[in-house]
Image (tube, rainbow, N blue to C red; front, side):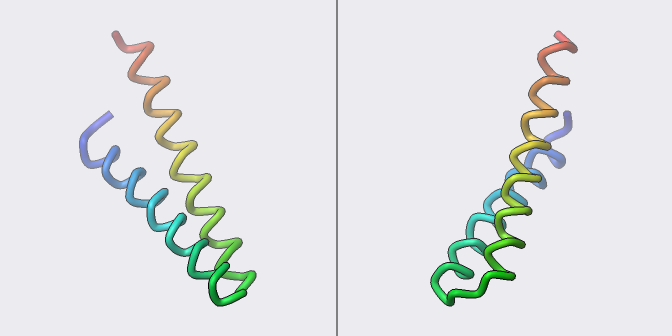
Length: 57
């Protein structure tokens, strides 16, 4: 797991959280869905990287 991947996945999760909040504020369901998808995807990728890292050591 490289530092670049870690930053990329964390950024995707944060971007998703922000997009989801903007969607809620503006009552835009499409933005809410996009944000939720990005957030969940970023979190899953982070979990996968943590699992890979745990088995490496």
